[in-house]
Amino acid sequence: MRPFTFNPGPRLLAGPDQATALADKLPPGPCLLVTDQDLIRLGLTDAYCEAIGKDRELVIFDSVEADPSKETLLAATEAGRAAAVTSVVGFGGGSPMDVAKLAAYLLGSGDELDQIWGVNIAQGRRLPLALVPTTAGTGSEATPISVITCEGGVKLAVNSPPLIGDWAVLDATLTLGLPAHVTAATGIDAIVHAVEAYTSARLKNPLSDALAREALRLLSANLLTAIEQPRNLEARSAMLLGAHLAGLAFSNAPVAGVHALAYPLGGLHHLPHGLSNALMLRHVLGHNLEAARELYAELAEVIEPDCAGQGSQARAALLIERLDDLARRSGLPLRLRDHGIAFDECPLLGKEAMRQTRLLVNNPCEISESDAQRLYEAAW
Image (cartoon, rainbow, N blue to C red; front, side):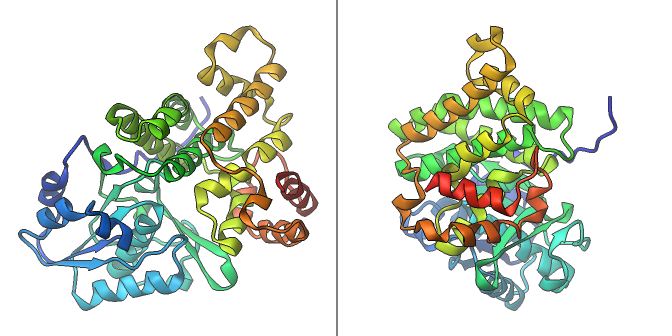
């Protein structure tokens, strides 16, 4: 066995109606709850706010937007500082959780944000942190990564173990009734996490592999059911667990080219992150096909066990075909033109993708600027 390191992530509270259990895990003193206005409006936060606020002051910051900005992060941090909070809860999709993780770190460590971008630079102590996902996709509750949109639409990340939460809550009742397009986009995002973790050129290891395979099995088997039967608790629970396992996998074996090419679509055009991944999935996997053939072939058997007798080339191609079919059947429009992106933007997108060096280095093969432009053109 080759030497490897593995971070097991946060402790879990799994099952329906975990609000009181989570409140009991938080320390005394004011708590900053980071969320968004839609979740407040829908009432999804009610039970958690009531339980957490029963014995402590609750400071609600609900101004998080999709692809949260640096300004939003700093505003959340200032809200926590003004109330002298002693803990932070991130409640929502990847955006509120990413803001909560970095706010907890900045409040606890006193570090300056612009000094900690990158991998393993943030080494201070954060405030106690709990994360409650309301979508089955980002896996942010499992990871040490926070992605923030900065000047010019550029996405920067802090990736360091202090950002891993103390607790994560997997309460599938919070995902019941999610709109089909949200379920689809976040589900494809989680599938990409599993595939890219399994094929990562850096830090791939036996534990991340096992988690990625089980995540892909759960997600691929339940995504369409969750879309077609939005109140199916069994399917929603499987999706939430699959997304968490994929998050654990890619927090140890980092994601690569699909994400690198997805980020400019979110940063420049504000497309949801999962949708951006879906738009580039088939094209990047096709680019990687020969370099990752054996690993893609292994993953094909997770989705379709009957293909085990076929050669690796056929199985690898089958994986790409099945994932593309799953994305199409999920109802997502899968062409850049469907989202108002002009063909003549492809050179700019290719240039912007080259900024994602922390992701491109993990890809099974090189993606040059000309490659990236070609892949955007193929996706158009």
